[in-house]
Length: 210
Image 1: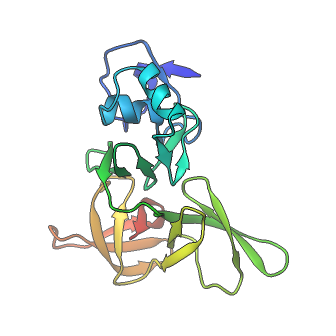
Image 2: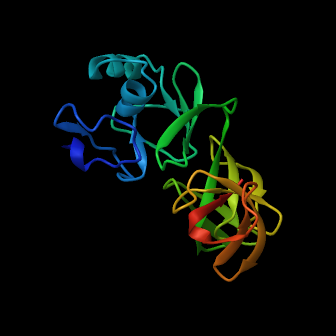
């Protein structure tokens, strides 16, 4: 499925003039980058859809360690995309996506968006990129915390959202900036940015512990 170029998310840095239609991501349609746009329009590693499909068929492209199967597959925030080298999908202060080279080839950062209690004292942890994992109910992992996960979804480290921790802003006025948590009160977090004297209060939904 495709959508009109003029209706595509402004988070993807593509020219607003060009072909009438652009590829629609397979999921997270307003908050992800489809493989075709990543390779052709952002990384400039191919010029045509045919070339991208050849790379896919040759298993040259991976998302979080898994071979890409379609040019429409979605690359979500903090996902690891392997092409000519590994990249992590980040977002800039301009609120546009960017691929930054990374040394990470076996793990990704995920934000916990909710939890669901299951049988046998286990919990399903749902993550910002649409994936989920099963954990013990004894694990002290909270909604809005972050996890470093291996590509086979094993927890490598737990990053709690708490005072003194660094955070990355993923939406709102301060998108793309990093700061440090000074105070947490209910759903609001007071953030100290290096270039600002005053604290900034943000909702937990706007930030990710890093």
